[in-house]
Structure formats: C-alpha cells, structure tokens
Amino acid sequence: MITGAKGMGLLNFADNLAASILCEQPDESGYGCQKCSACLLLKADTHPDLLPVFPEEEGKEIKVDQIRKLVSFSQLQSHYSQRKVIIVSPAESMNNNAANSLLKTLEEPPGSTLIILVSHQPSFLPITIRSRCQKIKISASPRHVTEWLRGKIEPDQIQTVLAAGCGPLFLESNEAQIDEKTEQSPDRLALLKDLENMAFAYQDPVDTAERWSQNEINDTVFWLIKICQDMVRIKSAANSEIKLMNPDMSQRLSKLVEKYNLKEIFRIYDKLFEYHQLISRNSNLKAATMLEDFTIEWVTLSKK
Ligand SMILES: [Zn+2]
Image 1 (cartoon, helix red, strand yellow):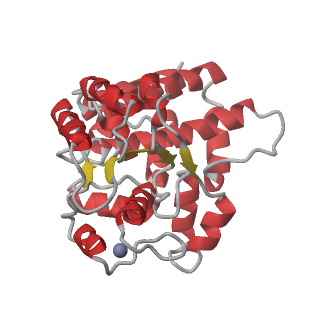
Image 2: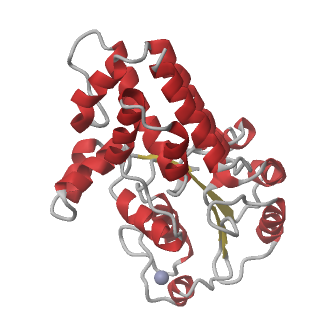
C-alpha cells in the first residue's frame, strides 16, 4: 500500500514500480528501459500482465465486479514476464463489497502477483485491508516542496500547495481534474472572505451555500477544513508562536476566532470532517444541502 498526500505522485510511483518489475532490462536505478517490448506495451496501456483498477467514472466507487475481475486476473498465468502487477487506485474508493472480496487474495496473493494499493486516505480503508498490506509512505518536507517548485510556479501558488499540506504535483493534478470537470476549484481566500462576511456582515448563508455549490464540492470542503484547522490552532495556542497552514490568513483568522469558542470551532470542524468522509464514500448527499447546513451553523454560532 502506497500512501501519501495528494500531489505526491503516488500513482507515478506505482506506474514506475510496475514498469520496473515488468521491464525485461531495467536500468541500474531500477527504472523501466522504455525500449523493450514490455515497456512498449506498458506505454500503449496494453501490457497483458498489468491490471489497473480505477473507478469507472472519476470520483465514483470501485465496484465488486471490478475486484472479481482482479481476483481472476491474479490466478491467471502471466504472459510475458515472470510476474503480474495490479494497481488499485484510489484504494479507498472500493465500496464495502469490493473491499471484502479483495481480502482473501490480499491475504494469500498468488505467488507471481504484486498488488499495489494507492491511497491518499488509508484511514478510510477497512482495517482488515490495511493490516494485510506492507505500507510505503511517500512524503516531502515543506522545505523540499518549496525548493522543488521554486521557479516552476508563482510564489503564491507555492503557498497554496503548502497550505493544502500537499505534494508538489498538487496543482498539476488538480488542474487536470478541473479540465475534465466543468466545476471550478474554489479560491481559499474567497472562501475566507465569505466566512468573514457571514460572521460579521450579515451575508446570507443560503445564498452563499448556493454559490459555493457551483464549485467542486470536494475542494470546497477540503479548504474549509484547512481554514478550520488553523482556527483551532489559533484558538488553542498558548503563545503567538503558532505554525499555520495558511500563514497569510493569520491576522484575519485571529479576528474571526473571537466570534467562536473552541468547542464551537471543533463542532464546525467535526461537521466538515463528516462531509469529507461522506463525499469520499460517494454518498448521495447533495452538495448544496450539505453546504447550506454548514453555512447556517456557521452564522448561527457567530450570532449567539
Ligand atoms: Zn523495458
């Protein structure tokens, strides 16, 4: 199981690992040679010994039928190589039935098969899955992320990546996703502005939620959580030496937290985290309803 933050290149790593195993003559560092017939088949996405298992539609579940195919694939003889590779990504999008039907194969994988689970949120996977995997966590310090990105993107974009607590490929992967969707990724400073206006200036929570629901829901909740985490940090800090995910918001957040006590901030945070889990599990909850529930709570608590 390969885990790590978004934008850390987990899937790139899994692909390279698969190439390294299937290539006929990997280079000294273990990378696929890019020339042999196995590498050419991989490049064309037609290698018969590699099975990628992704949700059929972006953001949806991996279904039990897909895992049944995986299980029979693992029992077949390999064609070209000594080994077969299966990549399941993102593993947390397996629904319960799918996860359950993977258990036996994970426990006793046929000798020549490597099953790679890629997950940004391993805590959403059942413990029965997690306990059967060898875990590889991929991470990078903020300093490394900054160094790697310097000169590649604008300084304020680097700040966005760091604030998200994500890997250096975060913006790239987000942009790719946004291109496919019609929804926009929300701007975190615009979200903060709305939170302030609702708490201080009688901005209507229902209208705000309606407007937010035009954006990508996952990203909206993601940034609200990040902002909320910083509010908790500020509210519970004993001194002014706090490290925030959004240091550029420090002054404005300090003003905002005066409206709420710590218990209330945690209540808001719990709510957001619950939404985050519901969204990750592809529950059928409507985005607009969820956001409205949040903005009304936000306004109610601030006006008490
Ligand atoms: Zn090769």
